[in-house]
Length: 524
Image (cartoon, rainbow, N blue to C red; front, side, top):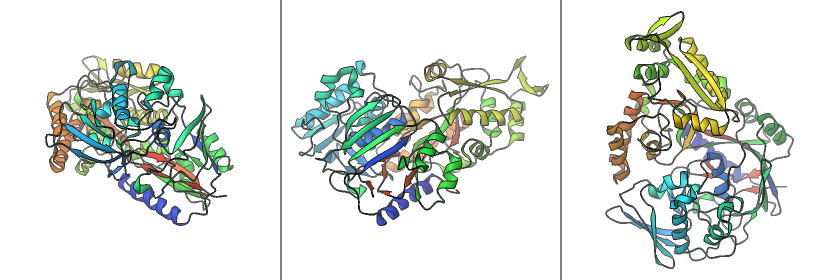
């Protein structure tokens, strides 16, 4: 399909509008089964770092604001808000009719307790605390008004408050369940928790009291679907077979070869869900030989045919990524798309200019061979294929490349310790500041092990600048710097290829790419 990520967004929204118009009468007793691709690490929004938990969380927990697919901010738990002139205080007026699934009321103190929980070191928060940036204090100014205070101005905050990792949890549940909170999720969302069987399924039911839907989702009141079962089916072929047999009415992460065929079938609806942020990319280790040499890093960029990689790994169902940010992101710089065309001859010339010589088909410098280590999570279905496709192109220009498939703990350790050259992965985001966690000195995810004071200063400017036009200029400058230093290898756009039965309509997603079922209907 010849469409970039902007096209995916428009196609997805158009499909939702079409399917809604053709919707049959909903079955209020319907039970939906979703073929889910990955195991669940936790249902605690504060402590998960996994993208694939986001769609589960967005159906159980509400955030203060709702982020539309095109990044507009709408009221959700907060009815309205304002930002102080100095950019340090965000003031929210909350809805007064919201209750958590355990029957306790939602108010300003609920927000205060959630922020305290996230920022408590004992919580070991992951994405949630990063989304707050320097805004780590909440103060209740009345029963239903609350201020979130920032140590420095932080322009991304409002959008990031709409990401499900900042979903509001019941303060009573936080106290009651402690470290078991992730097995007992209690939010205010359209569905409430019934059961979870590790590596088997998550079951949620309709929240009968739900009446504070985001305006843009096209539905008011409790969900039409009575119960949703997220059936964990990690084997892609098994997930497809289950769906085709009618045992599930929706599946995610449809393999590219099946996606290409099934979207042509009348009984299915294809919904490409754009997962915004940095796409699928590989941080390139700037401290480990041989990628500590910028000539090697640049040669890697020229050596890899992104379209070829996607064809090998994804049957060409998803477009390649050519820049640090996804095309639908604020601050995207189209001019960078042509910075590193596929050019094997240029890759070899870049190595020669950098003092490398080719001997017996391989490159070496100062008596040391250019040998790269690519790591990938062994349990993933896509990352090993991407690593192997990249390996294939590197070897074509004489770069020795070895792929190591590692279990998640070993993979994390290898990246944190800098034992790899590059590793394919993903990172979601709704603001270009998402790049800062990967390329700022001292950050947990700085797996490129790259440090540049100029880049750090640009990130600081981008976070603190309130003028949108000036922010774009700042982020475009820092993206050019990242590409010039070649510490990031863009690979492909990040899209969840969702397939549904024609009987299922109204499936939508929030900004960032989190599938939402609160407005969905399943006909008989």
